[in-house]
Length: 305
Image 1 (cartoon, rainbow, N blue to C red):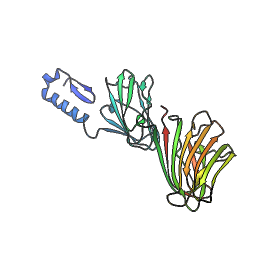
Image 2 (cartoon, rainbow, N blue to C red):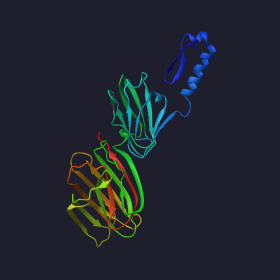
Image 3 (cartoon, rainbow, N blue to C red):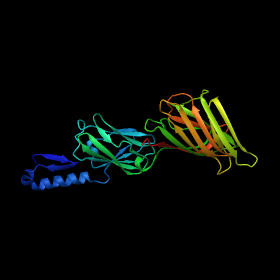
Image 4 (cartoon, rainbow, N blue to C red):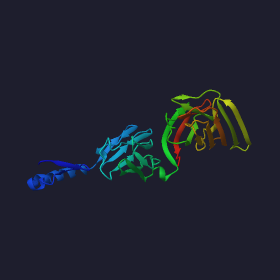
């Protein structure tokens, strides 16, 4: 045949070849379709960054990483996108997927992010214009997006993964479900940056609590210039452990990080705390006074819009 042209992954002979080489031309079209619609048509990605390519057209890009990932749409100058291209993405990993625009590209609805098992379609609507539409479970479906799950057993302290807090969200929700291994213990929290806890006397906090035993009345305590924040208690009794719901506000912004907690252990407690500096923090560490802890901590990001 004299020549072929490829559209959306399918190779077609030129119009004159249908007359000249009919049988060969038909075979070319059939082979092209077989290749384009072969099952599975996936592009499996496991890194924390990816730039879409022309070969992704007609496929589903699968993301799979425990940490946050950024997927970038390049401009037409770099990739000759066909008119009305749609890119399909499904997140199989625990880390959230965020979409970004390449140089000169405009992406509408970048607030859509993909939690685990969520999907989205990226639709090309102009030369360098794209729109992200959530197909299931994405940011538009909930005000909270799952970031990570950390499970641990008999450890003196547990730190969430580095970069749990990023510029993607301003505020975060931490759900803790754990217990002390040998006796009741206060649960303490420190903020963390680049793998290092803040241990200086920079924490301010106050706590209201009432004990589960009748002999322990409603009470309060507070501390200033401490080296951690007391967020309640962990208990050895099954079903009572350290069940904490913690909101972390503005950890990555140029303002003081505030911490609010509601939880139960051997007492019902409400805590308010503050880190008295404007440093950016990307994680937290939780530990108990002299006790090991066992359980699970889940982190979520509050959608900014």
